[in-house]
Image 1 (tube, rainbow, N blue to C red):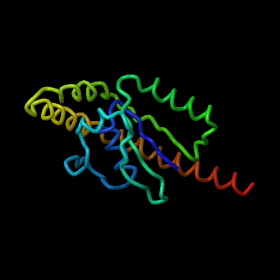
Image 2 (image 1 turned 90 degrees about the vertical axis):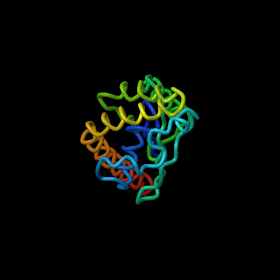
Image 3 (image 1 turned 30 degrees about the vertical axis):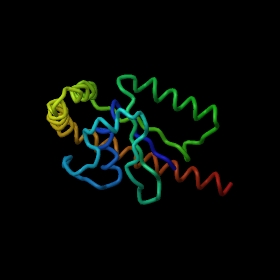
Image 4 (image 1 turned 135 degrees about the vertical axis):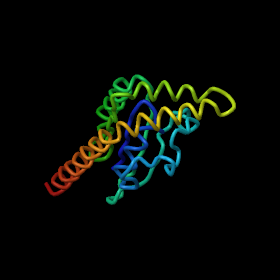
Length: 159
């Protein structure tokens, strides 16, 4: 299965959620996360590969800007048109109350001489650390959803 965590950006809270899901972090230790707050990866527009879970599922993050609902709806509609089952591709919105503040901070990264990147990082660190328990709760739900889909997929193959 391919798991895509979609949010306002691919390199902020969605990246933290991906690492929580993969059990590569347990606390708000963002400094060691590859790609964290690096907008050059987000601006590409491509999903960002983060790793594989213990069941071999590929985990990606995807930044959709302020229009998360529209982007996710388009992906879900495409899945239906192409008859792609959720046991093959799961798109999960990662939403937090301050996601638009992070999105706005990410825009500051365009300020030259590295000043924008510093602003982006300071604001994002503060917001994501504050929202960390909420992100953990969302990833616990994701674990449950993946386990449920795996069970459904096994039943369909047996039937």
